[in-house]
Image (cartoon, rainbow, N blue to C red; front, side, top):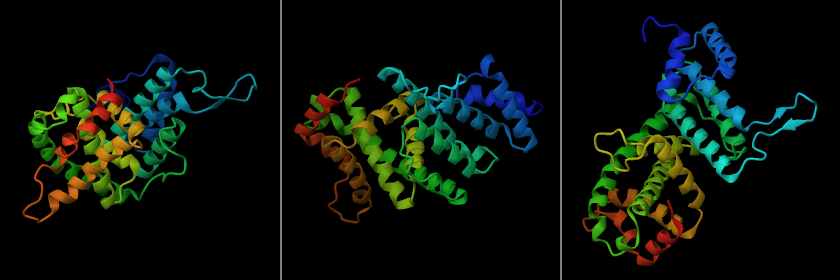
Length: 289
């Protein structure tokens, strides 16, 4: 975007990366952020990220009443569906920021601290979780996690080609089948993430980036960024249930099993859960579009 002002470049990032627009009512906030970014020699990605973080925080952070009525919590009074929409919006865009954080030239720790606060205010993570890790190591951890997930994405694709031959497949829909593979992939991401010392935010960012593959030449899930965020939310909601936990553990075990040098190892370990008819019946009962 050579030749454009920082204001124009920042607004372009907001439109193209986040598919979001600067509304007139929030134009003063946007102009203030751009001015601060310019004074601090920050680039358009830093400015765009902080604008989006502030906008998201405004949706969930309590603020002082102008009539001295105490704090007003914007979350109060929202219906379950409205809360879900706000959380999906925040989860989707915080994942985008985390996946593209390397493009900003402001300290990663500053961005991560804001990400943490927004996610806490949105009730998506607990306040006691780590705010951020060392910024030199965080990018390396994310990169290694993404590389590991790419390897197992190929195994996922092969398993999808053979899943119709399993006993349990006939009890589930295509939507439910992808949900099971998504849970397994989340188990894979968590297993690799633990080995790399990744926190939950890093795993979330990597999972969202790898499953939002609708624009890929060879998509596996064929989910848009919004759909990937929605599926991640649904998976985190059920991951504590026995049937979902069993599927995620299978995904994690598949990592060690594929690395095994045993000549008799199962070459398609992800298909084991699909052979469990009772487990697939649980999926059919609990996973609805």
